[in-house]
Image (tube, rainbow, N blue to C red):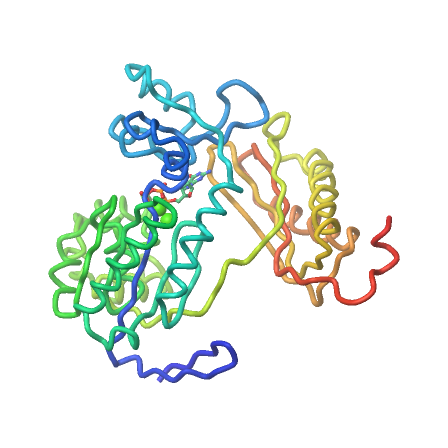
Length: 379
Ligand code: DGT
Ligand code: CA
Ligand code: CA
């Protein structure tokens, strides 16, 4: 039995019992949002860019529509690379990110999903898990109808297309939602799990990245079926107990993690591109303190307290690194914010080999300041 606390109700569910879980993921999300407000973009390659404060084409691609992807443009590559790859497409469009707009669209779509789920778990602006076991009475056919209704309703309200994966757990549904993108609907009933997973490349398992894939390829293992040949002892030796257990179960389609009730958690953050790439503490400290002031300004304006503080690095190779910590109690105090951000910076810089390009500070776990305003709120 596994128990779960949801709206103060304890729900008991036997994990051996069939569940029906949806994973819903919007297609080329930021770029599709841009297409909804400018339909003429639909026939063109569209790249949504995070332009850095250094000017020109400095920065990275956040995402691109499927036309641009045909030319090899994908998330994370420098804007200059994307422009080279799209050189022959004079109609290619490069737009700056507009997070407020994407959040607005996301909210509308998430409302549809919430209304259609027994349990709704927000994962990010463009994806969520839904447990629909009860409402479809454990029937995959009814689940398929419900998924189609959700797709239609999201399209009516937001003009967005999404892809849905349906199975008996989060892992298989996540893999399934990615299987027929864009505008996909992939249903994997328990009896078809093995056939579905076996054919797939190892890389399709969430959490298995380039490096792990390479190690498996060196062992001559390419598909999920190949991976099943490894016993748990070999996996333990190669990857350590925790990852080994995850991989061993994942290739067999086993995942007991419940869909947990979770709504979007609001956070306030500020990020800046440094004047030059650096890993020098004193240099970064100055920026962190400045960012804390800016974040604190937003906290104050919204009359909020925060209980979690985080810092974020975009490193010179464009990889990300972040650290956060939970405070003992909620606060709105800037000194506390700066002290914690400074400690996180020191921790993050231990063993830092690569230089840092962009630096961010965020606060989350927000609550309203109750009652009479503290006098410090006026300063
Ligand atoms: P999809 O789901 O394959 O059709 O395409 P996306 O663009 O929806 O990809 P997904 O689901 O991995 O990411 C959702 C959004 O998150 C995406 O529209 C932009 C943002 N994003 C993803 N990867 C990156 C990245 O490397 N850098 C930045 N800045 N944003 C990213
Ligand atoms: Ca997506
Ligand atoms: Ca996603």
